[in-house]
Image (cartoon, rainbow, N blue to C red; front, side, top):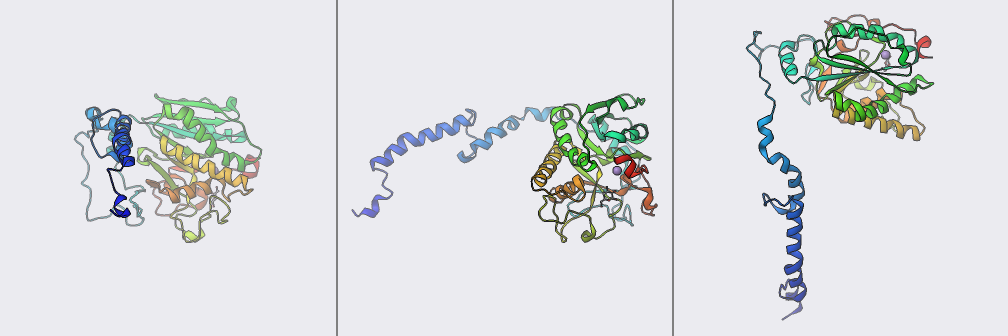
Length: 355
Ligand code: GAL
Ligand code: MN
């Protein structure tokens, strides 16, 4: 016999040891790590199977919540006519763009009510910004998620200045004390870290969705469950018609928020965004990491946490987009496409209020 034939010789003693002792051990280990359950699939996937096993025990299927709509009266959805002919209502990744006239709130309310969703509205009231709280909360009680369980998470350095506003049943104010920063830019940058920390520690136990909103605003028309989705961002009122090269993204490659001129879908406003608690945690955490890396590199993104939010939404497309109805500034007039102004900036003296 030539040497070559010995390469695959199973009768050679070394191979016998492998087959008789080591291989059974590998099988036993795989079976053991599969939770000691019978073989349901091929060996290499046993680790994944271990995770899937809880779901494979199909008992949970019998306990899923049924969302069942009652008999309802509404006009038939159109297949050959557009809901809106003046604006886009869908992105190329099939996220709806929410404009007035595109949704039936009765259908949505039936669905979300049966899920008994709880919404956390996160607002920062730092230093003089506490003056905006009264109007914000009063108008939110009139227009924001009416009929739903809402927690107003007010993050403030001045808990004593939080006004007493009468709230509807199932809604409450939760005051969370946080330190302030000397620079308003740092207050903004810090929001992502605070949101991620409080989400992990508290929000996750109390609500299903989180909405982060600027406080120097008032609600002036309906804002309801039509906004809720895994993640949602709002078209900035100053850029919803603009070409991407004119967006005020961070343009310095040294920043983690950098976006090239030939990239970008929309310019999203940091004044109104949100999603499920899980998704907002991921978003806030990742933006915070970008902000910290920037800080270590002595660079601060041009529009602070808004720049990082835009970078995040470029790489993780939001599942819903809100039109500028959901964040408007009356200083920009009232274009015809804007049938409703739901959440509007309260005029302020920037220099006076920021410092
Ligand atoms: C301004 C707004 C800023 C920032 C900026 C982005 O209109 O006040 O907060 O969003 O646009 O260019
Ligand atoms: Mn603002």
